[in-house]
Picture 1 (tube, rainbow, N blue to C red):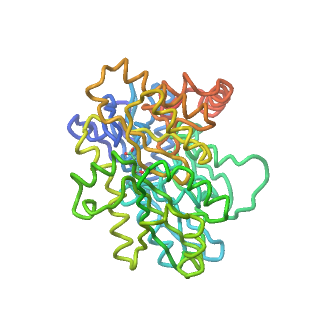
Picture 2: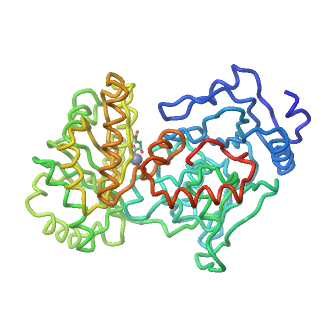
Picture 3: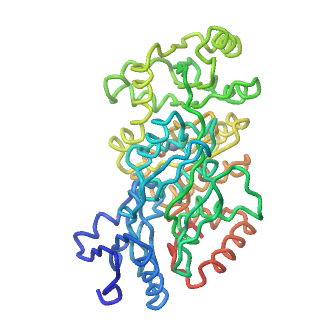
Length: 445
Ligand code: 2HG
Ligand code: ZN
């Protein structure tokens, strides 16, 4: 491969059989064959790579562990995949600063474990947390159940190390929550999916680790009874660290075909609530909660120990994989509506006859709306259903992606339905930071 010949500090893959795994992520999409895959091991490699990309007119597609759900790391025409899995750097905690620096290559699982080992908590917990890389979570602004209380990845980033089109690595931000010298440039990269530059590392914010958890299974007879609960709890000062749910159809599937633990799940529909603040295991707390829940709490079950808690979460964590196994050609979305409008959303899904089953992060209105029969549906009709779904979310003050991002999967819908002023501003920033369009071309905008 001439255009990459002599690249320093780099492993280069160009044999088609070695490139094959890079054509997929966890979305339903497939990328095109890249020119090559490179694994840089130092700044000199990146500097030279940027120089050649500009000279030879090829794009650079960043890749972490390939667990993304929107195709953001898939190669497009005339691109080189930059696999950051061997990008160097030793994660380190600064207890005094309540912060942790790690390279993009660090597995999220290790980042969370390192924080925990010193008594701290790094909250972002996408479903792929045991297999994804930190860099991917930064590029996609990953979410997860804990976002209900703790927010998204971006809320935990203090500074970002990014490769820019000058070929150098720049750090934006400092190791403190207070930094106000102009707009927060580092935040521009979080959720950018690598279109402005490549994220190589970050300083993350930590918080003291929770010391107690109350985990509850809340089965209900009428699933609509769940829909006002997130808003009611919040309005009364109960902020769960997670509030997940399965609608009747998803619960029935889990019960009928899921693993052993799933077969015993109660209710017509089911919510999982978790609290982690100090005092949440006290009787006073639980009594207050029961009062607030009222008759809906009739079948409430409290996890009595860590083993039960883990069992509950294991079922929730495997739901996406389980549904995929049973409906390999399903389409799963991740729209958001404000939690105050959940009831209107589900009424809208019904009145628009969108054949959806839903589970996910009810507490923050981020819903995994699944069209199980997508593979057997006429593509034009499927598109109408999906656009109907996105429009409904937007009409209710929501958005078409809460945590998975735009990538390739939602690009057309984003461009068609997104606010034109937003898209124009993003394109202007892209032109300013990456005038030759070398960073992840063809994604997002
Ligand atoms: C989850 O919450 C993940 O389980 C995956 O975000 C959702 O597969 C999905 O759509
Ligand atoms: Zn999710």
